[in-house]
Image (cartoon, rainbow, N blue to C red; front, side, top):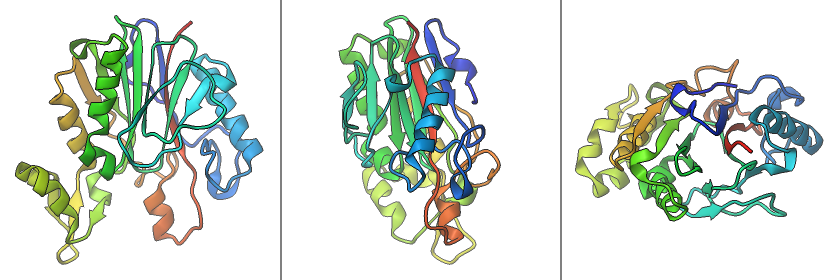
Length: 252
């Protein structure tokens, strides 16, 4: 489990979990927390129970979503029978952990320790472009948070050095904001680009006027020992991949 100095706040527990220390085997070794993966579900549940224990909540109080690369937000008050189809969650309920699953996309954890409100979102390129981070902050404000008191940390994700995109990819970003050219550099492959999704997220979240915004700067693709990576698995022709979890909770 990796923690961020900026989230060492009163009443807040958090962790950006690596792939190490779990029960899963093979390509899912070993702390795979993805309920939607092809892993043995018994092992996934045991892995998630380990994570819940590290965060300090009951196993069924670690809540994650059925992520769909959108901007919808769910307010979480306790265990759920079914995962909501959202990419962001917020809560002001102690003892509930919000868990974001990733394997190259950006997990972002948010906290207003003064208002006792937390948030978490999953930001792939689609969610980043649509502003899932913005909808997360707005949902936190509805629970009483103030953005000038919110801290946000972007966790492990694919780095620009390993995120090659095709010729048409930048268009969606540049049609929204021409200055976003700064997040693209030419690839060695003709008419392809390397996209800096992590810095894009950091800068866009900073523009919301939060108290503090930072990133861990760890690449999921490059560090196989610590992280699962969808893109790395795809390049190898593997049939599936494990999911990392990043979680945040209000302490009881």
